[in-house]
Image (cartoon, rainbow, N blue to C red; front, side, top):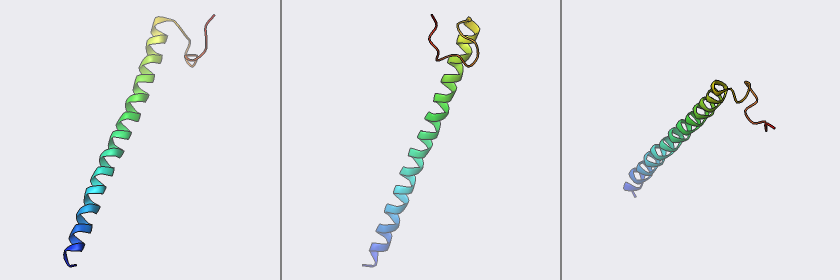
Length: 60
């Protein structure tokens, strides 16, 4: 039963590391998604397709 503490500590550390990686990937993905959207809007504005803030409206 003395080794149970080490097993518990090891699982806790492993799960903390795994959750840290997942959180890191989530934050990176969210930042990249925002950057891609900003670049799309910038490209649309430079090409003269839409005015700022009108990227989702249907043109007709």
